[in-house]
Image (tube, rainbow, N blue to C red):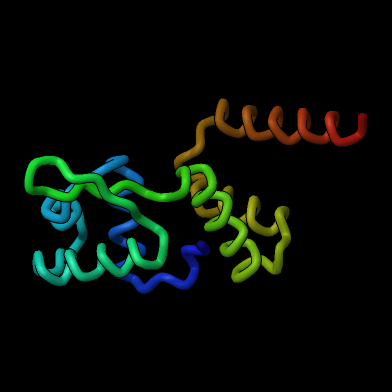
Length: 127
């Protein structure tokens, strides 16, 4: 169920549902940037459910929607798509871009932690 094939609105809805863990259509709509109408969100949620991205349970008269795939699985899929699309599957290019993008926000300790993480992974790979 790759998220790369989702429309902008579908991705926005999935982001809200992942962030909240579960939500009604109205809760989804309230958390969306530039929310669509209630009926439009309901239609998109139904499409996402038919595509297998969401599932629902009934709470009173409301349907509560949850992601079908665990968040970690969705993150892996999104990162793989991002790497393939923008970085030609090059981890060094992707990491360099992220560091450059956020360099002004990173502390010295953040940089040390990044180096430690890279060094640990290198040692594990060489073992």
